[in-house]
Length: 312
Image 1 (cartoon, rainbow, N blue to C red):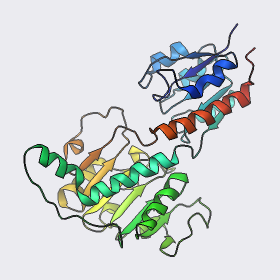
Image 2 (image 1 turned 180 degrees about the vertical axis):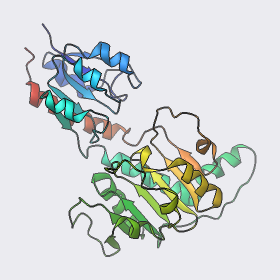
Image 3 (image 1 turned 180 degrees about the horizontal axis):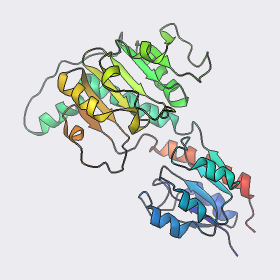
Image 4 (image 1 turned 135 degrees about the vertical axis):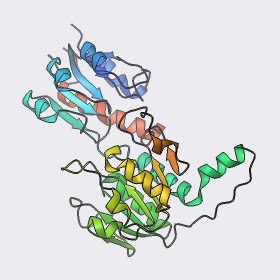
């Protein structure tokens, strides 16, 4: 009987991506439960039985789904985050977990940088105003000389820091786990979280959720930023307390909050998302041709490493 591989990332679930060809050439059947969208739990429960491999995206995976995965031997993420997976249960079932770490870093870092510049130059409200027939001219700011806090210095945060340094910013980085030499530049300093945020003109978030599950940016930490700060979140929605962020936008403490991540996708209606100082993108950080190609190639490679390149 031909063995099945479950494919759930939105960038791949319509089929046809050439990066999936090695799986088919190896004799595996590909299963696409929800083309072009995040699969529901019901769709996963129906699709996962009989699958020996899973090329997984950001979809939430419940313990019940894993309990139905009767033949599953490997879950290969097309990215680095695994906080959507019930890790202890998966490990207890001796199912391998593989991560395509760093393969979409360039795409996410470039989006974060683009959102930073959009916030500093008020590009989105200016565009909207001109579409409405007006001639808005907001006084912008330059990145050169700005104080930039980069929270998380993994592959994405490191590249973002290097972009900001190349534009002449003064960058403070916080990451308790990154190596001491992660960024080498005369205008870069490693600092603790509070010191990194204090007086920051720009904050870019590139970290997983803290162990305590609490937001990094809350009412107290937002007050330590420079006035009119630009905040960019391409990491995790939970890193920001939305009520506190809305208050900061209304008070002028924050001029722009740009986010590519949400607790639910699409997001539930919430007052903050109607604020003129908020820029939203639909979780497209790693959704570039180049990033999708790299992550797919690595995720497929990981599956074949575990399962072999000839389906039983």
